[in-house]
Length: 130
Image (cartoon, rainbow, N blue to C red; front, side, top):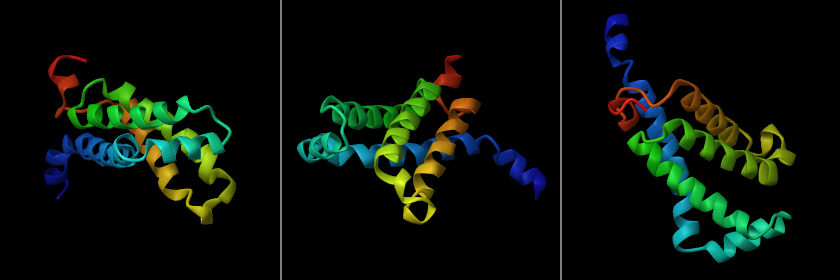
């Protein structure tokens, strides 16, 4: 069993990248293409400037696509991690563990893991020595 799992080890970074990319793209798509006005109102309601809405949505969308491809993977993971920190700080931190901190904290840990370990073999970064 161990030998079988060892052969599958190169898939670990890919699977983590794809899950993070799915979260990032899912978060961003509705905001960028359908509801930026609503999201901007929400963000300004948090006490942030309106441009933060664009930065959070577009940062999430671009980092998601970069994570799928494995391009500038460490930067993409740190970018999505930063988006997650802002959202965590402004929406969930006050609620505590029972208030929905689990997914953002897990997302942040995954972002940190990808940023520290890199894209893995199944990536454009690996192919071109990035």
